[in-house]
Amino acid sequence: MSFRLLIVESPTKTRKIQSLLGSGWTVAASFGHIRDLPVHAMGLSPPDFKPRYELLERSAPAIRKLKTLAAQATTVYLATDPDREGEAIAWHIQVAVGLRNPERVSFHEITAQAINKALDSPRPIDLNLVAAQEARRAMDRLVGYLVSPALCRRLNGRWSAGRVQSPALRLVVDREREIETFVPLAHYGVTLYFDGPEGVWRAHWLIKPLLPPGQEHWTDAAWARRVAEQREVVVVQCRDSERQAEPPPPFTTSSLQQAASARLNLNPKKTMDVAQALFEQGHISYMRTDSPNLSEEAIAAIRQFATGQNLPLAGQPRRWQARESAQEAHEAIRPTHVERREAGSTPEQRALYQLIWQRAVASQLAAARYDVRQALLDSVEPLDGHILRFGAKGEKLRFAGWLSLSGGDAADESDAENRDNPIPRLAVGTRLTASDGRLIEKKTEPPRRYTQAGLVKALERLGIGRPSTYAAIMDGLVKRGYVTLKGKTLLPTDIGKTVIDLLKPAFRFLQYEFTARMEDKLDEIARGERRYVSVVAETHDILQAELGALGGAALPHDPDRPRAEVDTQAPVRPCPACGKPLRRIKGRRGWFRGCSGYRDGCTTTLPDDPEYAASRGGDAEPAAGRNQGLHGE
Image (cartoon, rainbow, N blue to C red; front, side):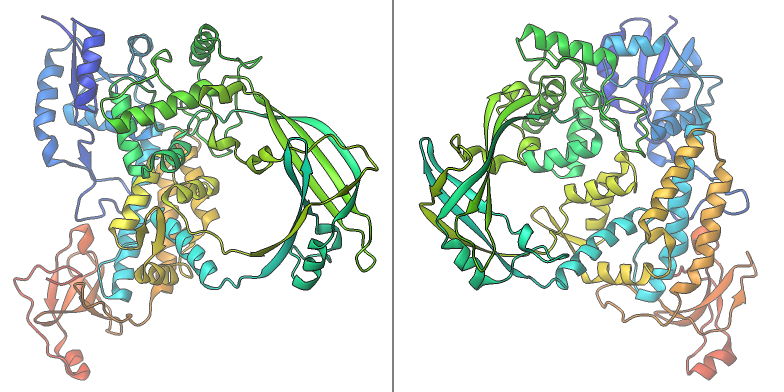
């Protein structure tokens, strides 16, 4: 019996897709990545930096099964995820399984319509996208394998640097330093209270006209106290207007992570795990995206649904301006079946689906409208020759629009303070007597520490990393001990601060603009405007030139971590096997010479130089038969 073979990444997808395709199809899974760079070696080297891939041990059974199925199939389709990583996985499957001219298809939702549409338009594997993903992995490896060993030597322990991890850590450390050096400033304001027909309303002292240039706060407590004693004012302006509150755009990866943290208390990694499950079950579109816009078909479906539910539609379909560095490879996150208000098999999945559903549907609804009343009041009597001005603002919801969908949204809380201020209609020239005046004592506050969601937002704003990497960055910082979590807040550890203090003066990849430009170059590779080799070679050369700036004596050793003492003053000897420098290293049994190319697979070790050892007061130890790396046994 002949059949067509469709290969996906996740076995969870196979059951859903098989049920949609029916007979004549076999759907099989690669179980994610099947090949990767070596675990204990960099896996690439100049001048061509060609990656040396190894088949993952866990992938062997899947590869055998795929080879058997491919040999029997009439056509093989590769339907890995619709992003660069998915494109690279498709290429690895082609190579490992030995496929000739497989058909590449991609769909952003697991529905019969989307899958059939993709199958009607197959294409070859996009090697530019594969090259961009390879370049990302290669640059990550270069930073890890060139910088991390130098960092370990300085800190006498096992620590790591990362192309995106380290700039993210710098953000946390720099913010902590701002907090540590912050000096609070006491300042003052005044609020007057008035009785009105609909209740008490208030007006705030407008200090800006009295401040000298460059000053932001009123710091004279005694003078502010005298302002609070004012009671007689005159109305100099009262005007009514309307404010519209537009709905927020549908979720991107980063905005979903931020909203899930604020509303559902899910960290970025958990959010992505839950979203992945919803995607594989066919409930939402692909969840790794930086586009805030929906497809034409999705907009049409939402608007049709809203009409049937008597929801207030916007006059025209809504679209948003994506940030400048957005790839916009596919649409924003949305429900695949908008008529389904609930979906998911766990409470977390159902809660996240509801968040996604509301955001997507609200995006096409009419704006909320508020009646706004603003008044300006002047003191009747001057204070030390100055007329005091007070401002009042009140709002009342007139038309709920998109807010009718959920009863409100965090995106529209900017003016919430004005919604319980019932200012009456005031005629210009009317004199009013305040019922009370209160001195408001305040202190400037330091910047807030980053939460995981806040750090995601900062990385996106700076153009560092991509949506698919944010959750892994957060997870890595915690697992490596560079930050700790206190509730949702990220606190840098002492070693995290030390790592940044060492790396920031030495390496350009710690500079936000430089790292963002590296991301741009990956985009250029994906578009065929740059070559893999030129971008990776440039990164390699920059790192090699900067490594010397991380030299110097080792810092004190952390006794809780393994150490390998390296004599940085010892004469350099070339490795007889590969030519790279031999380093003088002290293990548990004394000093020996070890090759600095151990991460590239060179395990050469030699006895220490007896004459040099004697001059240093150390005993040389034969190293024959030993296979020791940089960090000791």
